[in-house]
Image (cartoon, rainbow, N blue to C red; front, side):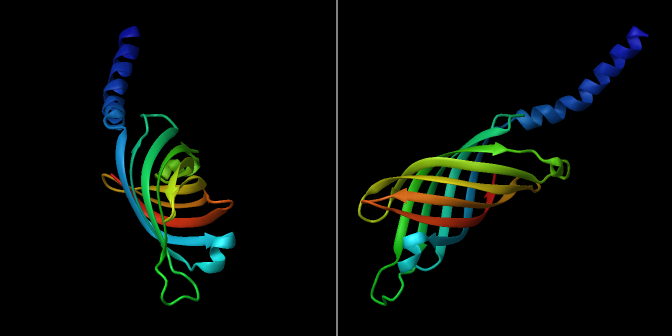
Length: 173
């Protein structure tokens, strides 16, 4: 009887081990994303909806719900009521923590996560502190994953702040 139980345990281990090894093989990823950038508050009074481009590197240890992402961002907004004006840009570098909530839909591959972080942002005149908070859906694909994400970004400025919400679709390799 003990021999049969041990044999079943060994067989189960041999079936599960390849999946665990491949899941742990590479905790690092590269991500690219693009989408709309929607100005909010006072910033929306003089800018139009623009676009966001993001490039990042991330790390999530195997079997952990917590990961990290370092991202560079470029946001460009049209300036309202000014034909001769350049576009308003916000460039930045931030570090984010990601928490995967692992809902029931994880069984079909889709997962919901929260994301937030801090960074430095250049608004054209100087570099300022900023923070962001948002959520996303991770969509596994063959060999990589896609994600749909929305975050609120607030950049502290000279006596005030500017805010915007990028809504992006990205790929993670």
